[in-house]
Length: 215
Image (tube, rainbow, N blue to C red; front, side):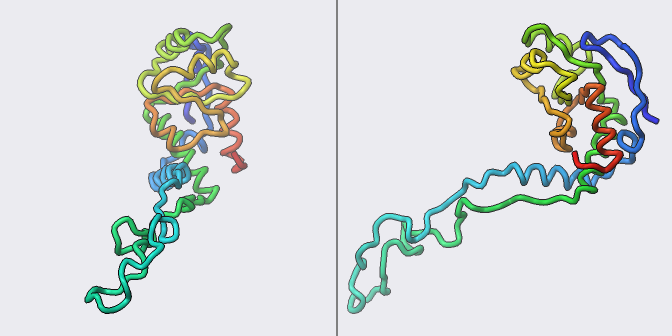
């Protein structure tokens, strides 16, 4: 059974915590994690690419030349695709849908694999809570330094384990991301050097993932 130390926001150890092996101690499934990252990136994609079709470009109200007798190929409009500045055939319409669906069991397996990878690589830090009296970025920077959370850091928390002052203190720190437990995903976990989770967020995720319930 995986066991981790629990720290306070000053970096002082205040206890230990047993992690559920079915959530934080499984053999990572690399294919599931790859698929989860692919789905995450595809679903974030903005379908803004668009080209103008024949009926959207300007010009072309008159035949370029008469139908016969010129020795040239007949042309009906300068808006035809073979003309310079003509309409584009089969171009992006701005309404493409790149959304990919993922089976819930595979999604949960991928998330468990990512969390287990962080435990295995000793990149998981558990904090009892973040609670500041006032929004102070320097105070959050000092707290993360005391927790040895340097480089890209992802903080996963619950509403009760991180007050608004602490949340505001972390928003302007480069390379620090913050997610509620229900927003956690494989891409952000694997894209971080350190995963900092509040104790309550760990317990909630353990309950959700071990029961196979919707997160």
